[in-house]
Amino acid sequence: MNNRFLINYIPGSTPIHKLNGTTKVLGFIAITVAIIATFDFRVMLAIFALCMLGVASMKPNWKPVAFMFGFLFVMNGIIGSLMVFLISPESGLTKTGMETIFWQTEGGKLYMSWELLWYAWAMFFKRVTSLSSAILFILSITPSELAAGLNSLKMPYKVCTIVSLAFRTIPDIARDFTDIKNSMQMRGVELEKASLPNKLKQYVMMLVPLLMSSFAKVENISNSMDLRSYGKCKGRTWYSEHPATKGDYIARGVIVLMFLWCAFYIIFFRNINAPAVDFWCPWVPKEISGYWF
Image 1: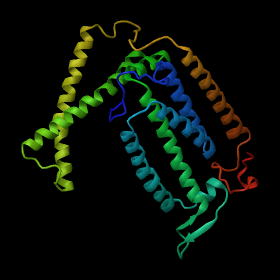
Image 2 (image 1 turned 45 degrees about the horizontal axis):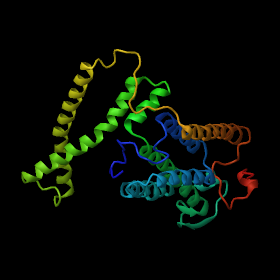
Image 3 (image 1 turned 180 degrees about the vertical axis):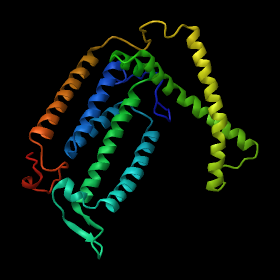
Image 4 (image 1 turned 45 degrees about the vertical axis):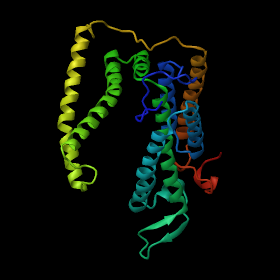
């Protein structure tokens, strides 16, 4: 669990880790569909709480998790909200159905409303919820379990193997990059105190040996798979695949209920009885927003 890439290669011992790959993949799909289907902050808050409880139950290394959330806060929370304010300040009115302006420039071209702040916050929280579900999925599954789960959903096993190998080569590429960086520094190339243009130039120069070593490893893996007659059969088994347990059946029951809820929400609340606006706002009257709950 002390992996800085959040990728596990050895199954954990928590109840979520003990679920098989099929259950984990189905759960991630169900949560993703639920996040995409709604703009309601209350629903996203419930999904976020569920995902974070799942992450906490696996007792991960919180340092890389905190880094990912911090990076998202800067990119989406600050930069994304600033772009919304500069490009479309009218989003508060169009997305929530009401506008309460508390600041504007003399010409009125730029202004700020409480509804715009709520819209920016809701979009930011939607991205955070998506990230929390992705972190939960990545922490809970190994590359082999992911391949087995995708294959159980009728995805071609050759594609599943490519996905598994892609995740497995990430640490190798990172290790090669560190070795190349250390080698260049031992030869007198300054990277820590260099100016930004020079630093970028040196990092670009590292890509050539990094790509060459990566291609060499790809060739070795390809030759090894050919020697073992990979791809000659129509199907294959997975060493990480195991029969569904009681925990899997309980989790799949919850997943089925989530899929049913998504179908009901999309059909009824987004089509048959769709509200007047996309985003629920706590201080916008029901008569304006169209949300009756």
